[in-house]
Length: 126
Image 1 (cartoon, rainbow, N blue to C red):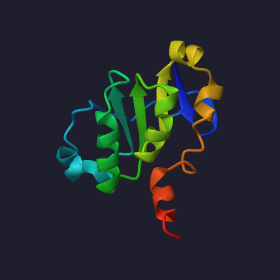
Image 2: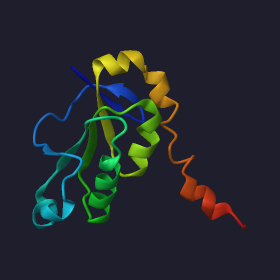
Image 3: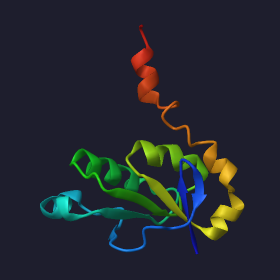
């Protein structure tokens, strides 16, 4: 069973159908002709050390994708803020990982917008 992580904490998967599943090395340009017709994309994270999914998510958002974007797989709580900044709406983790890294650890990173380095850089020199 999987656990869905959002800024509100742990929850159940309420969006079970209609996913377009992508590996982390997918070419987003191949989706451009059909992107407007896709409502939900899940990007696989085969290992927490594989950050290609963050880049893929950011590229999809820059291409105009406005649907649900989910990171799925081996992510850890420390990566939650990065997932949100790169365009993910939520993260799907295994229940075993949720037991090792409880909701409180994920919620500690849920204030990701306040700690965005780009926001801090904008304040320099003011």
